[in-house]
Amino acid sequence: MQIDVECYDDPNQIIFLPHCMLAEEGSLPFTTHEQAKKLPLAAALFDVAGVVSVTIGSDYIKVTKQEGRPFEEVSKACLSVINDCLTPLVEESCNRENHGGYLFTEAACLGLLAIF
Image (cartoon, rainbow, N blue to C red; front, top):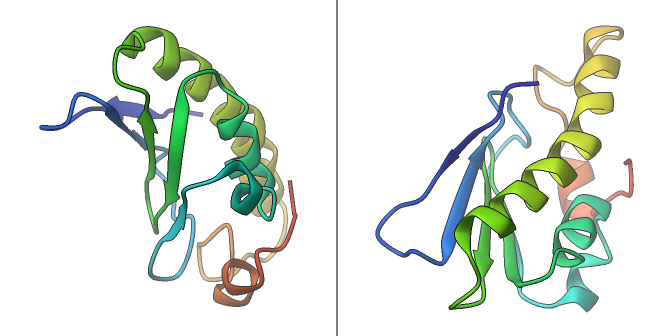
């Protein structure tokens, strides 16, 4: 699965673009590990040393790292987690009727279903 990694003006934010639609609309911000437990991808990203927040958007995943943590270290670890979580979903989505091209339905995002 191809995932592009970008950073913008804030050197502590890392944007992952998985080239697939993750949700129908909106974004799911997680600012604590406790919140992230509701969605296994977010929880797994919080397990990466240095991650302080995670946002899952319609076609991106944004991770904010601790200031001073090496970008490359955090981005490689997060990329591995994202691949591990999303690849099975993408493969499954290709083998069944999906939800209009999205990996998560709006109900799944709103309900924060644990589908990983």
